[in-house]
Length: 116
Image 1 (spheres, helix red, strand yellow):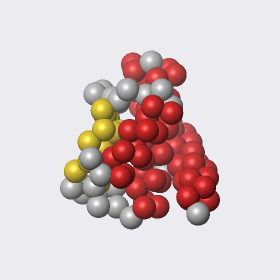
Image 2 (cartoon, rainbow, N blue to C red):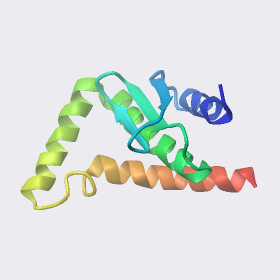
Image 3 (cartoon, rainbow, N blue to C red):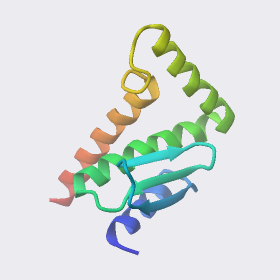
């Protein structure tokens, strides 16, 4: 287990999450699969991109845990539909994606300052 994997496992515990964590060569930085409660992270990211991705996906897992799996999935999909009907981007303008990005930026900033 490398340092990123150890850090990610520690952060999952900090947030009381028991989701699976998979590091692999992906075509994207990361993804949270709410059906399987699994976070996927590209294994070759820079430190900052790794943290941004980890915290972004952790935020999705936190929402799922707080709301319940089915409610989170349904509400996320309703939010995508709302964006489409409002002529907005279903990802970039999605409440859950905006919240996850905000959370990731804040936590990454805190972690990078703490590490100095």
